[in-house]
Length: 213
Image (cartoon, rainbow, N blue to C red):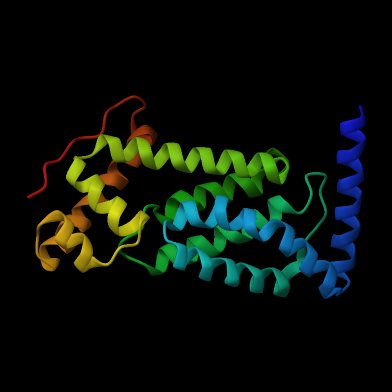
C-alpha cells in the first residue's frame, strides 16, 4: 500500500507541474522535459532512428514541439509521458519520411504505433514501464531481423547504421569499393525491412536469406 501511495503522490506532483506548464510556467515545463527527455531519447527516438545524430536532432525538435503545443495537453491518469511519447514518435515519423536510405524503420511502422498510442493512452502505462517495453521491443525486432538476413548484409547494417561508421570505413571492412558498398547497403536495408515485415504478413514465416551480389 505504501508504494501505491508514493506513486499517487508523484502523480499528483506531476499534475501540478503540468498545470503550471500549461499556464505558461517555463520552469515547470523545463522540469518535465529534464525528467522525460532522456527516456524519450534512449527508448523512443534512438531505437527507431538508429543513429545518434538523428536522435539528438529529433529530441531537440521534440522539445521545441512540446514548448509550442503544451497548451494542448489534457491531463490523464497515466501522466504526461504518453503524450510526450506520441510527440516524439511524430517527430521520428517526419524524419523517416524525409530520409529514403539508411533507416531501419518505415514511416508506416511509426504511424501504426502513433495510432495505437492515441487510441488508448492509458495502455502506455508509466514512463519506466514504457521505456522498458520500447527498448525490449525495438531490440528484439531488429536483432531477430538481422539474424534472419545474410550475415554480410547484417554486418553492413551494424557497421554503417548502428555504429555510424563512415561509408569508406565500412567499404574497407567489407573489402569492396564505396560504390559497391552503397549497393550492398541498399539491398541490406531492403532485406531487413522485408524481414521485419514478415511477422505482420504471415506469423512464423522465416525471412528469405538473400545472398549478396
